[in-house]
Image 1: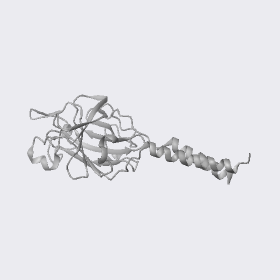
Image 2 (image 1 turned 90 degrees about the horizontal axis):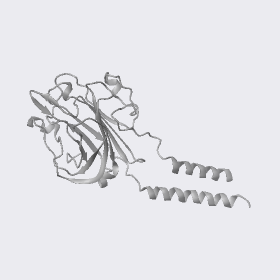
Image 3 (image 1 turned 120 degrees about the vertical axis):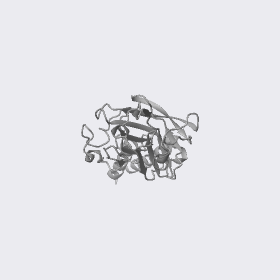
Image 4 (image 1 turned 90 degrees about the vertical axis):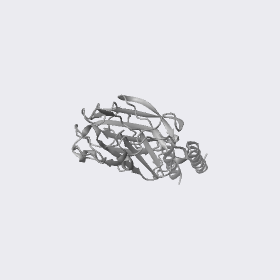
Length: 263
C-alpha cells in the first residue's frame, strides 16, 4: 500500500511538471519540424502529407497555368496549408506554402500582393480574426492579431464567391493586443516555393476559441485560394486551476503516505 501511494505521488509530480510531449515548431519558414519529409523542390505531393495525425492540412497540388478559380501558374499558386494547436504553450500554428513571394507577383503588367490570414470561427464566413502578412521577406517578425476587421475582395469580382476575403482594411477592427510570430521566405524549398509560417496566441481569440474554424488565404487577384477546416479545439483550462488541482492531489497523496509510514 505504501509503495502504491509513493508511486502515485511520483506519477502526479511528473504529470504536473511535464505537460504535453508535442514539440512546437520554430517560426523561421521551414517545415522540417512539422513531421513531414519534403523533397527539396517540394515534389512529389506525397511529401506534403504530415505523419502527425494532430496536424490538419489542405493540399492543392495543381502546377499548371490554370490554378482554380483563376490562372497564373507558379507565381500565383497556393499549394498547401497546415495547422495544429498546442494548448500547453498556448499557440495556434499555421503554415502556408505558395509560389507568391512577399513582394507580390506580376501578370499582364499588374502587380498583385499576398493577402492576410483570415480565420472564420463557427465556419459561417464571418472571418472574425485577421493576421497581417508582411510584404517583405522575414524570418522572425511579428504581426498584430485583429478582431472583426473589414476585408477587401479579390480584384477580379468573378472570384469573390470562391476566394474572398483577401486583406484587412487598415484601421478597422479591434487590436487584440497580441502579436503573432511570423516568417515569410523561400530559404528552404528553392526559388519558387515560399512558406508563410505563424504562431498565433490562442488567448487572442477570446471566447471564439472552442468553435470549429476555417483558416483562409489568397492573394489580391484571387486566382488561387486555400481553405483549411479545423474541428472544434479543446478549451484551454486556466493554468492556475489545473496547477491547484494537481497540487491538491499531490498533497492528499503525501498525507496518505505519512499516515502509512510509521514514525
